[in-house]
Length: 56
Image (cartoon, rainbow, N blue to C red; front, side, top):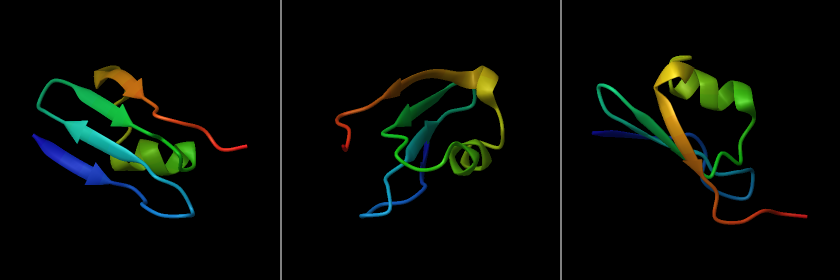
């Protein structure tokens, strides 16, 4: 399993847990284009997205 961190801090948080067959997104508080790049545009492998909170 690979974890890619796509931002961590006041500008946003985004993480992807990646296996050969599946991708689980965590937080996604960064621009969508950044998350898509992080997962090499493999949207068909995304099985879910966990979001713990939101900002106003």
